[in-house]
Image (cartoon, rainbow, N blue to C red; front, side, top):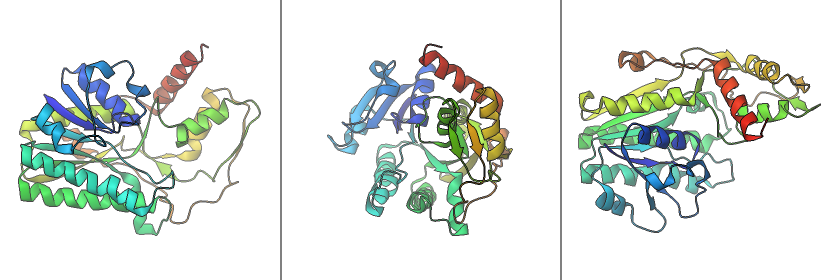
Amino acid sequence: MKVLLTGATGFLGSHLARALLAEGHQVTILKRSTSDCSRLADIYSELAACDVDAADLLSAFSRHGPFDAVMHAATAYGRRGESEAALVEANVLFPLRLLRACCEYGTGLFVNTDTFSRASLAFGATHLAGYHLTKKQFAEWGAHAAVQYGLTFANMRLEHVYGPDDQPDKFIPYVIRQCLQDGARLALTSGEQKRDFVYVTDVVEAYLLLLRQKDSLPKGAYLEYQVGTGRATAVREVVEKIHSLTCSTAQLQFGALPQRPGELMCSQADTRKLRELGWKERVSLEQGLTMILQKEAAKNGK
């Protein structure tokens, strides 16, 4: 099939791009002319790339389409000091233009990447509030567009995704990096909050499954899938597991940091809808952490 992918230069998107090519699909990516494409270095020649800051969005559809599906994985978190207007542009207006192009050019499936953490808005959380609010708003627009234009809008509500090549400031990469430093002191919260940690290849498989079953999905419908293992694990347990697997000498200072206001204390996916399609997770938490550490060791020649 022909697939248009956004966010391909990022963590999840790069894994999606690689998996789509492996299944024989033709993949066009939308990126900026300034994007860091290092995650795609080994497969870049196999991709068709369109720079959205150098050409009209519709040109990707007219030049490389018609597309069977759009997979939207691009996002702005607000961690780099983006303004509220910049978050709205990246997380609402840009994907709305993309969604409109799907309707004009007959793309029947739009797969959107959403997040479990926007549930924290209900608890008055302020951390990344702009990101969470804009993700919520676009999902609502997707539900509206599905009915109005007759396409299938699949909203992938991702739990805590982890795996190799993630951003170094994300939780698991950060903890691994600290644990690999001899004598480091790692200031942490109490670690009581629980998250559903799901390995990136299992998440990618959920996207691929929807693509394989595209023709059997209901048209003119908003479909929400929660993507995780269905099990919640305490953050403290994950940190201690990483500490053990790395044979670390770092000091784990649980309780040194306060919980954020409005912290979501427990999240786990209801995976029944995905499992009805035939999906199941394959990578346990310990296996996933071990694979990350093995890749790190190979990268560093150890």
